Image (cartoon, rainbow, N blue to C red):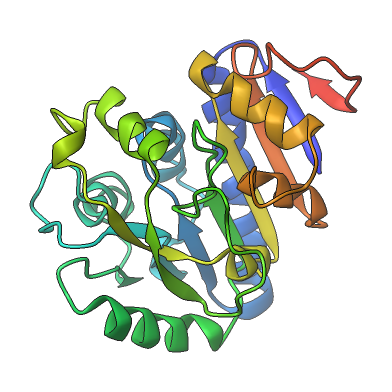
Length: 251
């Protein structure tokens, strides 16, 4: 894993967007189009804003797959990740080919249909974050590191649901759905490259847990350390609790 630490979240967003755009262009050059996976949440907003403004990406040759979505949440809800991706990535960039998770559909059918489409070809690059509880997508601890299902239905733990309230997506924890459809850990790791965007001080405990603890289902994003082409973008706030010497690039 390559670790890059930036002085603030905007510098992080610019650098991560530059890396992401480079990966997309390389995939288009090699295969004729790029297949990407995108995360959502407040931590990704600045990154996606910078990425969609990159004039050198031919977005007509990009196919987007959705990372996770709440079960039972309509797509016009303010917290809907389908809505988020439409507004902040699909419409902003002009992506015409995309596969979104229908949180209102039958979860098992949605998982099967999307999984079949995704399994046909690995993603060229996956954009991910790390949750406050160390989750990767909606794979909360203890995450399933073994399933080969591309998508699965996950039960969200309390820490994850409280994070959604803290980010302002819901007024109270009672409003946060208890289940979600998520891309599995093994499927995420099948991406040829992973760009992990993790700003803000509230992520610092999870960053330390995932980088300095064991690679464990109790720290789901720790599995990124096993991927041969992952770049982790941190700012000084999210990197503040790291105590070991890491081969991090300080920007």
